[in-house]
Length: 328
Image 1 (tube, rainbow, N blue to C red):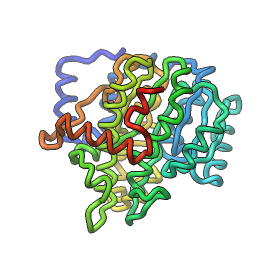
Image 2 (cartoon, rainbow, N blue to C red):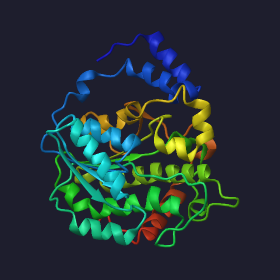
Image 3 (cartoon, rainbow, N blue to C red):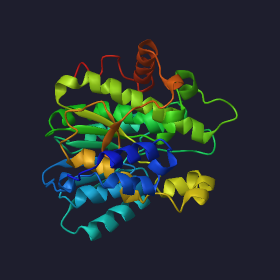
Image 4 (cartoon, helix red, strand yellow):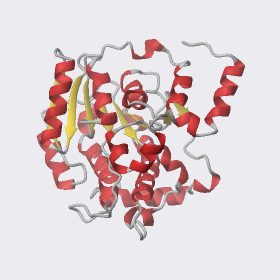
């Protein structure tokens, strides 16, 4: 493991407080000095990993990291053409890897149920919730939910439940939620999640769902504590992905010179998936392989009662009973 002097860690903490020099590629380069290279020297043969939103960006980079280590990789994609192209590219890069493509719109609850009923797997070791949207305009899902909420939070929550029995059969199983540093500016709000205020702001709606994701991950970790399934949430920093380029082009144009690569953004996802160091720390929030606070501003914290009310509403949105994860 890399050794760090007191002054090195002090400098790290000081620069991290600036956000920009923490979330960007300079932050990754600085944090990387403290990584243990042996953490990723893991043989993943026999381990089954599912990654949503796998055809590009962080999802594809995650699949690369898993395939390189011998995992059986299931690329879960919404678009058949883009998914097949990504699968073919990944298979060409790793000819001996076991790579599968499955189609799923994670915003559609009926599609999720059908997917879970027909998935030909007896166990799952790693489930990565990476799929997400940051839309320019408001839209509604097949189930009548705000599309951002349905895609980024409700669908993944329902998918987790649908795959729970297989996760229980996994070896050191873990669930990884890909959040965003944008959540730091938001306080949990059921009202804003269900009905993003006018005029619609996709960035705000996205950040609200990512705050909800962090809370859901913590509460789900509590419910699954005795199952052996670890639940992690992380944020990738500012990465140069197709989603960033198309969803927030102005931000991308102004910051492209300092954005992380997709592989750098996905590094902690891969680390959480293959390394066992975090397995005993279920419910934590991770950034660059280190646990971080989920609140940088005191006013973004929520009371236990409001967190409980949100979790109950999340079950209702996902069409699940309140004891869904406790009864399996």
